[in-house]
Length: 434
Image 1: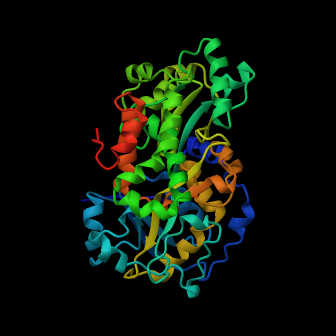
Image 2: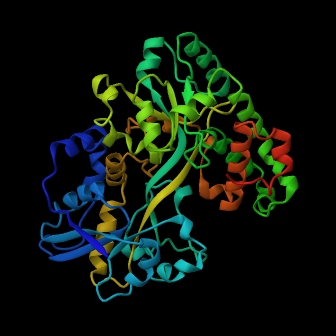
Image 3: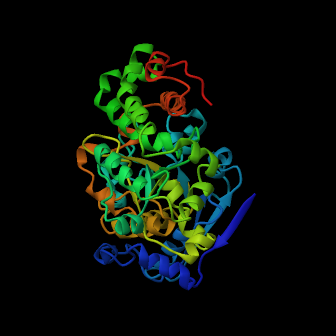
């Protein structure tokens, strides 16, 4: 079943306000750099298909595209059971012109037909310039073609109540030593658990947000052992040791009260946000996907509505030299080469894929833009300060999902006191998943 939304509408003031807060209009020269290839009066229609129930940030881009092609008609359709129906939908009599894809689909035979239907975006004749996208996020086929481009990305880290740090005269910690010292001062000021998060076996879970980026970095630095990690060779569990030892050190410090987190945070999304909005948590572990839900929940929190505060997203300062920015792709766009309006579908992609438009979209969705400059996005601007040697994408690590889940099982066991570090390292490949 398709749910259609026609987006030629006048935006509400609240949507415009969010856009302005997130930097719409910044680097306007990027938008002005788009030069239409076709006559302004060209009439055409395009359909973008995906699984989101709503897509306001895409709506914004439709409206901006109409400035160049006022006779265009663009719509977004939500497909029920998207992952199972998209391959066939691309070959229907009324196929979508552009559709959402994900990097986790790569290598899965289930999606081989879908990828065969993708336009080769890297074809020079299309003139789709994606140089503003961080190179590490670009996925190439075995033949070197680019058939999907990242639109939204995410990361692991923490939401920080900036007002608390200002009131206490403290700087947001940049490394583990600073984190321990800051938490001691915060605890002496009455904050029972300076850091909180969801004690869940999941990506947004607090142990994963803290320890996984360090583990992924260490795994990437031990690239010759990646195959052993992915193959569950027991000896490769040693690669987990530094991050597990740091996690053990963290949970046994004054930084966090794990039991308090268990009692007060019941899930890894809504409960995390609403507990953070109570205003008494200096640092709350979260992912960018969790942070994306903050805007719509500000008004739902009586505490935040009564006493709003400024907050920003930072990486978890788990390393001795600092934190790690591991960037993961949340959503990609691909063009259907069977589109009845292929030229204009490629034209919309030419318009969309530039620093300004991608940043606008991500800002409205409160996700991380895939672009090479994050400095003007206030929520995520701290990520621009992470040194390049500690900034990488999940694609670069070479880790497969089973290995990632086995590490997640290890940190969940160590973080909750069910296993020692030595036991977890020795049990790699056989640690039960919760």
